[in-house]
Length: 354
Image (cartoon, rainbow, N blue to C red):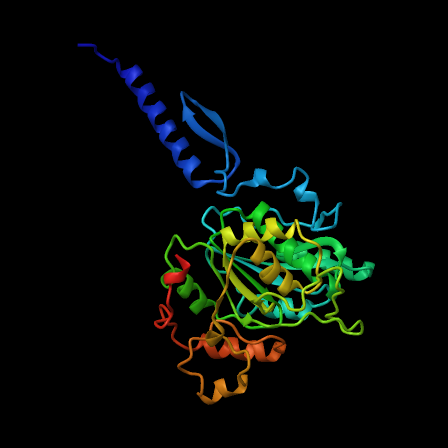
């Protein structure tokens, strides 16, 4: 029988411990250099390892070689502001992409101090375009330094460029947050009942949920040909008389696999400035994706003031209505902050999302 000396045994134990630590780090951390310091024989010995981020499940090779620098028909796209470390957490559950205008400082601050208050496994980002106002840009850059939640693309921040902003949001999620499970794309002028939304995603949906798009349905919407309308789309851009069924643009909840599919198809399409019809109608159709209407859990078409009279007390409200005032958003947040949170939505059916 071979006898192992005490010194050899100690070395063997040290090697096993280091191997165990290395495996732990590889399983629990994203790409980075990790250095371990160990006190050994009167001095510290440093061991450095390069840990590689696990690859996401998307076929990134199916995108064009210069995809990161392209945004639909913008051939030289770049992020003016990109907070790359937002999604360093390995277990990010929900990424909130808030569509915001450059000068909507009050709305962004209101969200940060109400329903967007940071929670474990949830990250929130505000998506902006460019401004020609140098002073305004300087303030935005200061805001980004303070909050680290601003993403800005190199296209002008205008209504007709909303489609660029939406696809840029998906691009950021795909390239910088590939391990997130769910994404909420939402405008900065609505309310989100975050405690119930998180319980809904965790307890109403299976852990392997895919092909999920939840929103308020818009079906039978005609393409506007009036050149005086801000929704005007010429026939050579989109020849059909009606858009396919799509999601109203003020919010949508979707699984991460949907993010990749919508983004991939959007990059191939001709630009249409009606962003909700483009993304959740035209691009979704190309990807063979369908959405599920959850308008019964939102305030669209309802008088929000009835809530405070008790008319909606039994309603499982996930999202408010579009174009809510700052005061009304805060009022909703204060109201729901004082209410017990249901662990799930009992009447929600999940068969079609598995």
